[in-house]
Length: 331
Image (cartoon, rainbow, N blue to C red; front, side, top):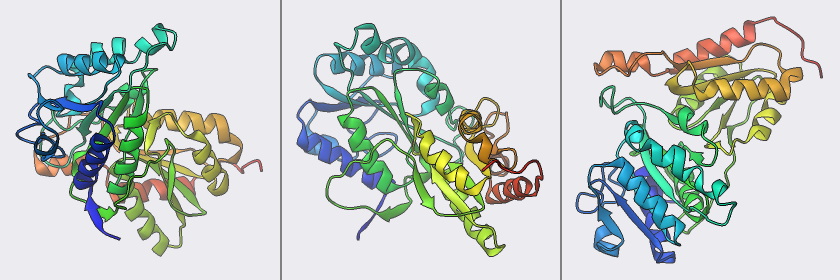
């Protein structure tokens, strides 16, 4: 099977969606002539014209607001925010409008809106362009939050998000755009569910977005030590697939959560709480968390790499989890 980068997979999903539904259009900063800060829209203007591919002023409030309004009257907009860090300037439209309108209208209005943006550190973009703010979005009722870890998932999840009648924030990690994997040419959709990327029996590594690859690399190294790690990719933070996590944790008895966002108040805390509520009787040790420290993302390359959770951090957390003689699970 052919291999595509995540940038190519997202672009292909956009082409499929545009060709299948004339109500789909996209707006954002520099997405038409330039092809977008994410460079996933590089040829959309050429294929679909300026009526469906439009540049906007530098105003996230206007971008999201226009998308929300258009979605309420039958269009299916895909709006692009250059960086997730800029969500704050359009937060009223997301928090108080997009997320609430369907509820406040008693379900009589749908908002099939997709907000595409990018997150994450590792490319030297500095503190204001490198954050992982998914926990803030996941806290808001009324919106979906999707974070793929590879090209195959990105294509299938984006097509599913575009068909969704609810607003979706689709977050792509900037460090993943060039990574390739096998992607079918035909259209396909992936449901909002977690995916077991690697089977294991001793410990469950739970992650999403770019940290899934870190968890998989750690699992390979742990295998050489005789430790069998199962890797679960959440893929979607809202709706949250707790059932897949519980099934895995009941099998292994140990769990370590890995994400790039700052540890304090990060989505890993919600994962840990829900596992504790749903599978406490199967846990044989406290749940481990591997995350970034509670500091702004550094610009200096050496400090930025120290900020991002590493394979060594994950392995250390697994060792600590397996060494902890806290309790025997109640089977």
